[in-house]
Amino acid sequence: MGLFFYLHRSVQEVLPPSLDSTSQPPYLFNRTTIENCDLTLLYCPKVVYQLLIPYAQRVWITRNVKGLQDKIKLVQIDLQNRPDWYKEKVYPTNKVPSLEHYNKVIRESLDLVKYVDSNFEGSSLLLNVRCKIVPGVYRSFGRDVDITHAPFIEKFQIFMPKGFNYDVTTGRPKLAKWIEEMNKLDGYKHTKVLEHEKMVDYYKNCFTGIAFCKA
Picture: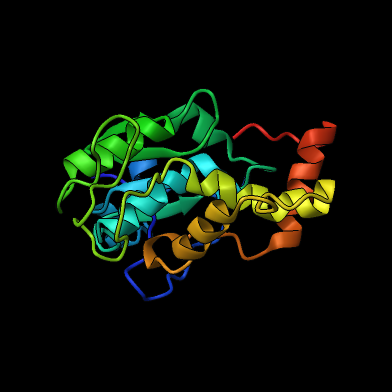
């Protein structure tokens, strides 16, 4: 089985601590031992993500909307201090997200969205490769929602006013309304960044070349 982290409906998920260079890999990423292993992780798919990365958030939203919180567990990686085992055992390019499932690792966010939708229980969410959620499948969405864009718009809305003194919703009433409606959806809102200052600092460093910002 594999690992992927999510929120369960309206219940706020308690997120795991970030794994850094001092952390041991979860069992499914380290098959040499099962000592001191959390048994709940042995039998659950695991998704590797990072709160600040919109690509990983796409997969997280998909998991939540399909109600897979009890099926997929989250593994958070510290992007500023990544564990060596992640690159060696999981993702050679050292990026997130990734999903370990049935002893194989799937990578790239759009591929992961389609994989989670196709290989786990629940009604299909996707109309096509553009990852549109089918209207009516989940009433909480109420209409087509492009889950591939929501994580990026969220980050822009937080960062642009503080980084460039620019409000992305100015002169865009439809965008403002869309954001308002998105924020009502449990499957999405539970994945949103809460530490705004931390996120702003992270992306400022990315733009100035100070930090290693590759997802």
